[in-house]
Length: 78
Image 1 (cartoon, rainbow, N blue to C red):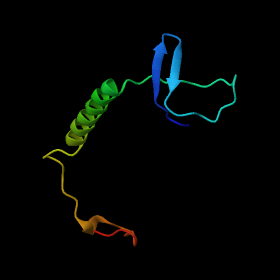
Image 2 (image 1 turned 90 degrees about the horizontal axis):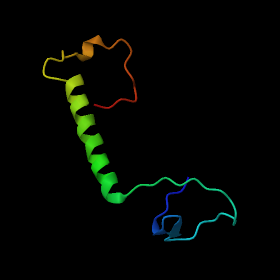
Image 3 (image 1 turned 180 degrees about the vertical axis):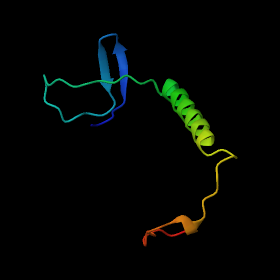
């Protein structure tokens, strides 16, 4: 899948910023994303992810010592 920038010419036409390698008459899927709104959504996802991670690993999370490891991973480097 390729992501390309386009400008809205009118309600039924887009002008691509760069050509695509698709034959005339071929059908393509178009996902509409307005960059300014996408950044807001991205920031909302980051905030929600941070909150969920904080709730999963809060201050009351027990500490686990390395003594509990039964089979060490030889590729793990601390």
